[in-house]
Length: 271
Ligand SMILES: [Zn+2]
Image 1 (spheres, helix red, strand yellow):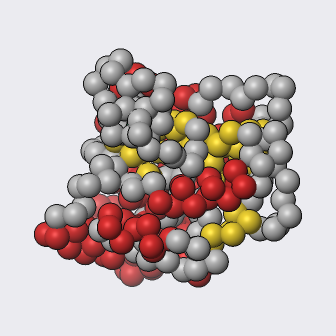
Image 2 (tube, rainbow, N blue to C red):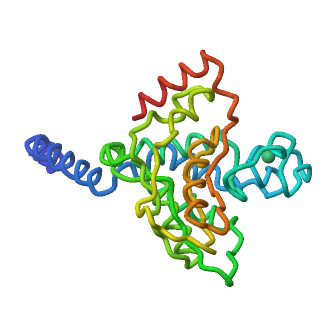
Image 3 (cartoon, helix red, strand yellow):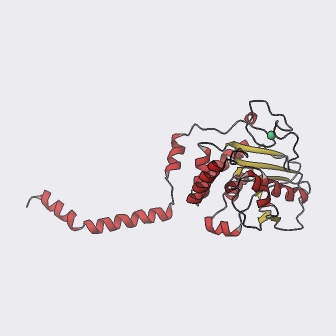
């Protein structure tokens, strides 16, 4: 028998074992590196030129997209008459491609590696805090049931990245005491009541007098969640509350029932 035939016969003989070993390695790889090179990572590599919005492209008060240099320090045409609970907002962009896909991967597909990417970008966009007053970075919390289900709070991962970059203390200050429906699954008219009373300070007698707070969330939609958390922090004496988010969604865009239903189906499928 020629060597060529010996080689084929040997390979065929051990083929089941080879397949089993290969599958075992693949499974181990998945357990150790969950979703490391999923679709969104490839998108990210292909789209490395994407950059966050410059500050002049969004309102520094409510975060909505505005024309270049048209927003005043006190707000845009949408918010200049409104008294917001926070002082300033920093965002990377609007909730549109490619940000929306990346945020969904980060939140729902266990791709927490995006926290380093988003955290670094937000940290670079965030002005340095004043050295005259203490500063704390904190996050919008998840309810413990959702935290157990997801395994991590994406806003806390972002907050820790930003804290490390700016060398500022990270500290959870607020807890979510009601397991509310995700704001993204509700029309704007229901969002305020959905989160009303849903948060409280972790330590009721917390004193934040003269403290600069940076409050981190992933997406701002209606702003109801951020308002609840910011109000608690201001009531505790916070000197300033700067909100930072990855993206700002148009708060009116999900009133369309058809769009809302489609969005709800997608969100549920991803959870
Ligand atoms: Zn505005």
